[in-house]
Amino acid sequence: LDGSEGLKDFMAVSWAMTFALLSLIEVVPAWNHELTIARTAAKAATKLLLERPGEVHFARQQLETALPSATSGRWLTHVESRSVVVLLLSPREALVSVVCQPTQSGGGCLTAYATSEGGAYVQLTEAEEPKVASAGDANRHANVLHLPAGWCVQLEELLIHLQDTGLGMPIKLTRTGSQQSSCADGLLDLMLGRADLHVAPPSRFLQQTYPPPHVLCAFELLLEECGGSLTDVYGDALDLVAACAEPIYVESSSRIARGGVLACLDCMRPYFVRALSSAFPRKSALERFADVAEIHQSQRIQRPIRFVDEDGEELKP
Image (cartoon, rainbow, N blue to C red; front, side):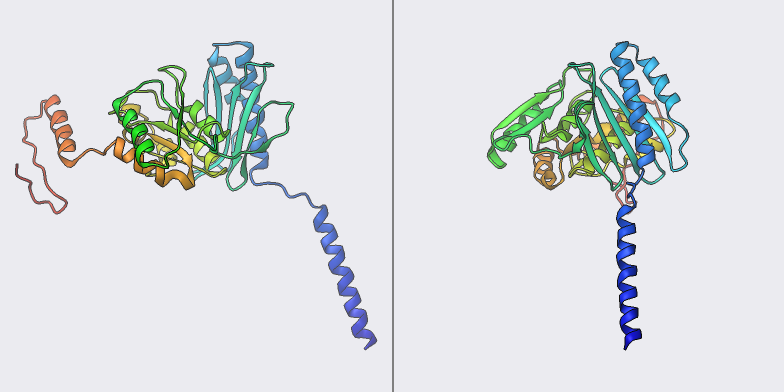
């Protein structure tokens, strides 16, 4: 009996010591080392943009030099006058995403960052502590929509659809600053809780500049880690990891330009997709046939075109 009681006491002390030791071990978040490198490099490039406005190529060179080779993936970067993007991409998924934007006051920068399955955070100024990001929820009494600088009749139809057949909430609009601006500002507004929806229509409805795939891939990780989603306007995935791997990217014929961009809270995506699908209808089969015929004619190909169905049977007019 005494031996049994002694064994129980020994086991109790052993478990207590084990839990005490585990509590002292610091849990390092996934990709913490790569995230630190990316944040440091992105902030340095952003400060260079503030010190030397307009000299984007110097910031780009400094950013590429500051990022060492990564064994878990490859670094992809994007620098423009208003933003710096750093993405660590593996062959299957985005691992680390950092977006910095210069701020007008104080000469600092706003930073948004995320890691795969590690959450998303924003740091409004360097003096503040980072806080957990929460996409959407910009206004409890209205839907705040971020739209591009250009305008088309389909955007007006979108607004009518949301007002007449939607939740009946008032609509507030924010717009991209200029025709040449990318939709990076709108995506960042969504992540910061300044907008509920960002829309970049398909190019056949409105000509505009779309961010390259790796920029959208960086925002896709940011949004997914804070409850948002990024798809085309029909709710279909853009497959941005595959787009980043393409050796040549042509914006005019890309999946992004054909389907546009929709970013919103994931739980609100079906609601907004219904309105967008009504305002921006997909091309019918006849319209796609006409596109093929136009390309065929422009290339002066002499062989006749044959249209067939999915079973290979020829379609007659």
